[in-house]
Length: 327
Image 1 (cartoon, helix red, strand yellow):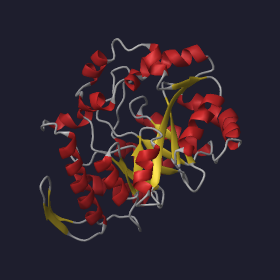
Image 2 (tube, one colour):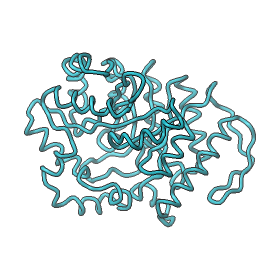
Image 3 (spheres, one colour):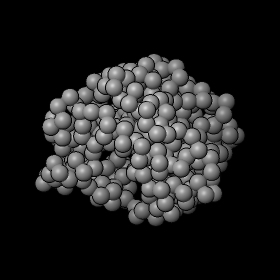
Image 4 (tube, helix red, strand yellow):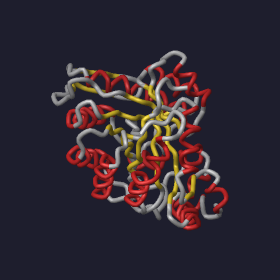
């Protein structure tokens, strides 16, 4: 259990929105009183229906220009294939300098969907985690501001130095599903989880009690509950796929094939589909009780602004009355 009531956030879902809309949603989320934002970092959307996938670092520059207080993180960036860790160090240092004290770098080992595009072999999970560990080492060294040369197992850096940096380096949180990624999360500033796994969270906090834990609640709100279910199936059928399948399919076309026969029941078992606050409150309560102290809501489909209005109008007051949930 987290020592404190969790912070509440919102997903800027790059797969479902244009870059200008993502920036606008960030501003609305801040005005609605949310604590933080997590923006996805993809080269491709999961499915062709989702239809978007802007360059995350450009979006973050726009978000920095229209927000003042809300915290922002990547959820999550792969710094080890499509983008060299020296470039991620450069990009993240710049964004952190534009958002003093507000930026968190969320990192993960990646998916073939986004990383295969440079034409390299898609490695096994163990190799991907080795690459991630080496990448984090490079990023932290470059954030120090010293000139750095490195010849490692997976990466080379030659006489690199970052001149634009924040006053203090941003936190690094690591997406974790098993023991090796959990170790990386322990050694850094926290972890990102796909659900309320108390065992995984405890394995990190037992050695790093101050570790932040980020968890996403995927939901689809609509004034018409049946429409919410239909939207969830249309826009996010991948919820029915296991992570190993999602991780290893290389294109939206292949994922479209994989979800062709996914039915509504399979999707609604994974996504909270509702017109009311109560089911969302209960799910957030479950996350909080598992020790997740940064809970961010992913509204599936096109009704992003409408959901944020619903949050301010109905969901926020309902959450204020829930156990161990802060708004």
